[in-house]
Length: 261
Length: 315
Figure 1 (cartoon, rainbow over the protein chains, first blue to last red):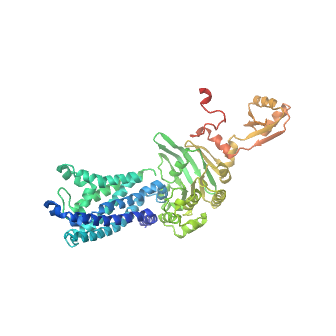
Figure 2 (cartoon, rainbow over the protein chains, first blue to last red):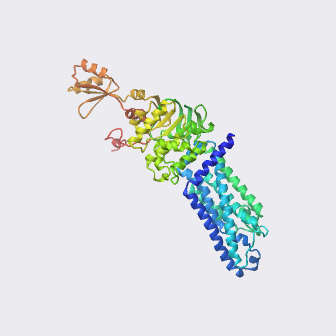
Figure 3 (tube, rainbow over the protein chains, first blue to last red):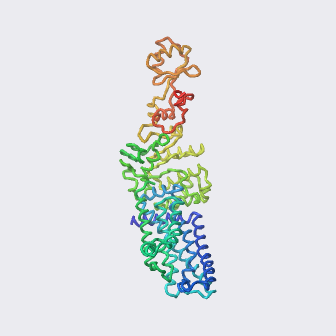
């Protein structure tokens, strides 16, 4: 079947591209080290100051989420990896080779999404379990650990990997739209790091009606076992984030089909 | 075969390619010439479906490029030699390109051998010289053993041996019935390689003819004549409506004429000739003549060494 053949060929080519440059291995290494290392460090910091927290904070303490905190930094490394798979083609000019070899550009985007999505899912979920294991070891030192059998914990850990996977695909969409490495990374940092803290400063009504639907705010809920005030539920939030991802990939796909290369 | 009909590309107010109609035939090497900014690269991107035309159409082997299932088998293209990810090896670059069209891995080794890059196949392309980059670009174009080759400046950066190699390669492929469209800034090289020429300027078609004919018709050929009575002959030539320039060595250079006409004029005026010869124009001369009105960017001193446009009158 020619359609399946086209996609299979495109996926094989994208996989070769991904595994044949060093930046891929650097991005993955940084993601794993930051994801696990910072999770351990943050768990230690929060664990040691637990007894000084307010009662309210102690009651809503979410050991699973704390032990996954390093993923917030790992996501950036993997988001950048996703961006580079597109933007490096534009900066080097290989994009013209790519699109003259595969004129049906939708297949290129589908192949990139499959290859990046699966790669990041494996790295992300692996890193999440690693971070959880070390984080719980550290928190256990303060008597604060939970196990995977606690309600929602396994979902939160796997969710950490799923969140990063969706984020990488979201970043891929940004890169296809923006086409420049620096521009796409700036946009990603804005969405992931700048927007969420800003929206916490907004009035309650805004948070209920607007902030909680923003990509990072919504997507992050899947890593929590205690739903905060004004936040969406874990799967609802993740669904909203997936919708954003599909929207951006869709805009990227449309532009890819219509723009000159 | 490449066929363009009314092919036009506008970027805002700028017309990069203006109503081009041409066909590039199999079995010969067709040279694609034009000054910088004439629209050569845009035309090549239009042929490959990378840019979409504002109007008109272009087909490759009877179909729009994008309609081919495995286009690398139809068309091999070299657009920019440096269109490589610097961190990727030559082998892996060729491998991913081969995989896009389901070409066998063995083909990668074959083209590496063909362009002489086998020794550096596993080296990252960042360290490649311009010539090695060109060879890798040519290897990429040859991967699918395509029926049509589209090469933008393939000899740029190659050493004399490499230039000769490309020339022989193109002639060989043409003799096997492939369609070849190749652009170059090296006129002498084009004169040797191309059987036909497609010349464009400011996006418009200026010439589409065999190379020899383009040179002959350009009017750039001159008659060189040496005589002790150059004043008399110059008067006679001017009276006959011809233009002649006196060279530094006292010879006259007559344009738009033939040796027969100049010889007869001299005889009629009893002028003794020491030399009468036809100065065959080079392709470079013909190119300059053809594209004179359509050069966008030019050093101010080209027309005449001591007249810089705008100076004479402004002083």
